[in-house]
Length: 340
Image 1: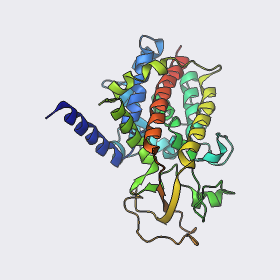
Image 2 (image 1 turned 30 degrees about the vertical axis):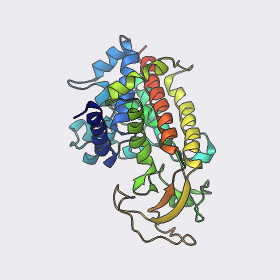
Image 3 (image 1 turned 135 degrees about the vertical axis):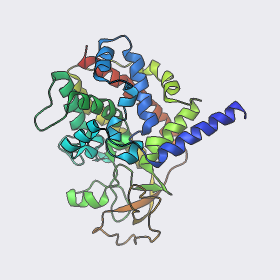
Image 4 (image 1 turned 90 degrees about the vertical axis):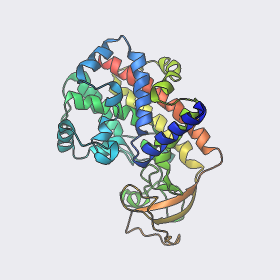
């Protein structure tokens, strides 16, 4: 078989494997971020401290998906380790740590505003960084140094995925709106695009997985390690802001909300229907349309059919490449600030 054909098959297999049970950014995205950070931290004190936290067989790459694997078997196709089970027991809201649902029209993250909450990605990431920097978790948190490390490595990546911070809310007329209150927000929330369906594919999954694979193909790369090599130059040029690293997080969250505005604003909403069961909300949805004039607000579990503008995947993949490079560079900056 021709080498080029083998390469295409390999990438297609990766796409099929990871798009079915999507992690935030997907395994490919998180591992790319970790590979970038590894390169930038090489020879630093932070690298030594990271290795001291890791156990046999673990690397920064494996650490990058630990927080997703702790969600359950379906995420990494492996049983939870005793350490993960302990984390889940002491952190019953850990599923909420990975995102915020800020209306994209706000164009910035507000810690006390709509879509933000004490267990969102911004709050938890700041507290996990503080835990590593000071040696103990803040009041109300129960995690070990290793667990805080796993959270920092993973959530720093999540923070750079625009749809993990900015979200779309849709009214009865199928328009994006800013909800007036929490009750409206519940029935209007598209869960970061998870309930926006481009046929059977949630928009959020496309950002987590498809556009990463698209970017890898554009760079002719097969693995996160290969992909990361093309991102290192721009990632290495990033400089640390002033102050402690937990103070940097909201500014980076603001970037994601601004980018989510671009990700959502040109999408056409064409239908609304009942959501499918489980995580396959788009693929298993009922074909019975909810009438546009009277969608059911008593059942918030619904999905919206969408169409994407021409060229959307190419533009999104370009942005994904940029954000993965930023996330890798900034992960290195955060870890080097914690362990200078």
